[in-house]
Image 1 (cartoon, rainbow, N blue to C red):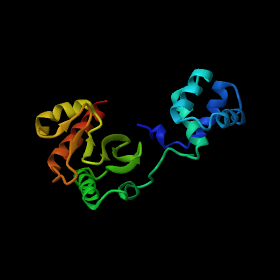
Image 2 (image 1 turned 60 degrees about the vertical axis):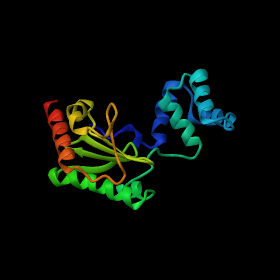
Image 3 (image 1 turned 120 degrees about the vertical axis):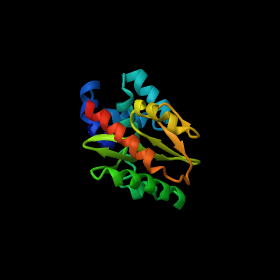
Length: 188
């Protein structure tokens, strides 16, 4: 699986914006200058309704003109964890450690602005810290469905499940989920 498009520099969209919508970026910056006092949603609606912009192109242009040149907020796991308290940090590190103990080739990186685990180029597990819990994602809804009997007592969504911020990590569960996901990826 390729690196997510979210990691792109927003300016990387400019050549395709110029090609698709037929005007140089100077024109689009002038358009944005005219609507700079509108909300994000109003700007997006304007670009889509009046110029046929896709959501991705509109977002790149709007955010760039607001001073955000990249959608990437974090470069490292430590940068991602920095705003959170010690309990949440410790739980996330324990989740990552539990997976890496069994899967030595697991690569831990930031993708989609969250910690992700990738093995042999395929994303197999994701983590997201929120206010009252931590969201874990085995990256394949079928894997989550397979493990539903072992997830009794957790809040389980379509592709994720929630654990308490002070979760006593179930190493076996995490390792089994990743193994199942790796097997599914290997089957193609």
